[in-house]
Amino acid sequence: MEIFHISAECYPVAKVGGLADVVGALPKYQNNVGHLVRVVIPCYDTKFRKENKFECIYSDTITLGSFNFSFNILKEKTDKLGFELYLVEIPELFDRKDVYGYEDDIERFLSFQIATLAWITNRNEVPDVINCHDHHSGLIPFMMLYCHKYEKLRNTPSMITIHNGLYQGQFGFDKLYYLPEFDLVHVKVLEWDNCINSLAVAIKCAWAVTTVSPNYLNEINYSANGLESLFNLVRYKSRGILNGIDVEVWDPAKDAMLSTNYSIKNFEKGKQENKEKLCNLFNLDPTKPLFSFIGRLLEEKGGDLLPHASALALSENYQQINILILGSGNTAIENQLNDLLSDYKGNYNTFIGYNEELAHLIYAGSDFLLMPSRVEPCGLNQMYSLRYGTIPIVRRTGGLRDTVIDFGDDGNGICHDQATVGDVCYSIQRAVNLYKDKEHLNKIIKIGMNTDHSWERVCQEYIEMYKLISNKK
Ligand code: ADP
Image (cartoon, rainbow, N blue to C red; front, side):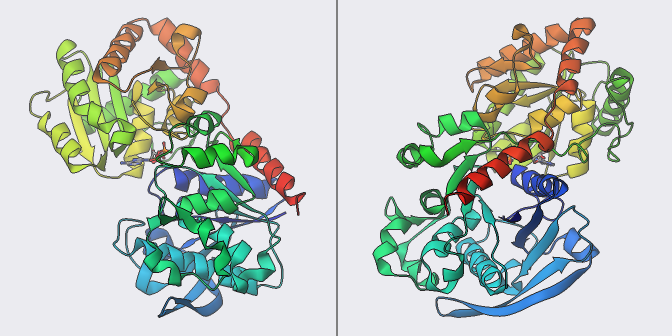
């Protein structure tokens, strides 16, 4: 099959979170089993763009309402990522450092989508399937169905994969004129809650809807930031497919970002050496259990619980545990976390920011990984931590429920039900007790390290879904 993935992120080209990891891995595994896979993302000003060679394979001009933009499609020359990578170059809109967070994000991602479709329509061949990811490519299924310019793609199946339903790309009908011409009888399809809602449009128009875990699909039927009833309506074409992880990038035996490589055969020694490096860097005590957090410091991740829970756990276990936080997001949370630094010096530290290398070292050198999320469509951190022999402590929600089972039920981690300081601290206390029983601890670590979360198995589920919708042509 010829498969297009259209996304805002792709690791290692441009990453903000899990979306990048998935779009950097799934296509590679699809390619490995014989499909022709092309990934299309905007051309940001990133290290990858500067350090790799690209050729321009298509140039054109698009209009966004009354604005004209020239764009180029750049193809990475060597297919070094294991699939064909295409960057949509629109310098005025994307030649910037960050992926998101600009006032003109609506104009940026609409232009990206329109340029992508202009190129795909102008090719001689028609793809077998177009897999869109999140709201940044959510208007594509609508445009393929209804915009006159893309008539050629009318019978091409489209699928929307939802990595995070909280973000929906809404904008007012005053920007309707940005869209290429279509018959206005279809305008209602764009509407959700008096706005144009890019994610809702994708859910309505795509031939299939997938979420990144089965449990998240169940949850969004009653909690989806206003889209619950829509998810109920499209249940017949929806499926929850649990994310995999790229076991080549995330391999403690080969990971170049670690201080020492290790496998299930020598994890005790290997993890301790990484822990010592980490503790050295952050002035922590390598003889005590290390609890870490990696992620966006937002309420959806339970980031607001971390300052209070850390303070409580550290005082209840005075000098008996370490806590290390890596992340950024809400400034108030960042400040509250930093306010604890002086009180718990030697057992607590933070790194406010984004640091891929440090994340790898933390997965390897920690004993426990905290994920008190309120919302977690799949969550990759827990799968990375399992593979690196670090026991995840998770709130039972979304994909965390699908991947982590409490050790009390012979599972691979520690689970709690509520996103509260009390539940987080109770789980930390159970972890402190478990840490004292090395035999039991190592047994749980081994269960985690042996879990198979590779994409090989999962990528087949995507292909089945594509075949299913192709049969409806
Ligand atoms: P999200 O909702 O943020 O996408 P996921 O669990 O799906 O959450 O994926 C998060 C990805 O981003 C993981 O690869 C994680 O290691 C990485 N990550 C998150 N925050 C940071 C950070 N501050 N520094 C480095 N990596 C980070």
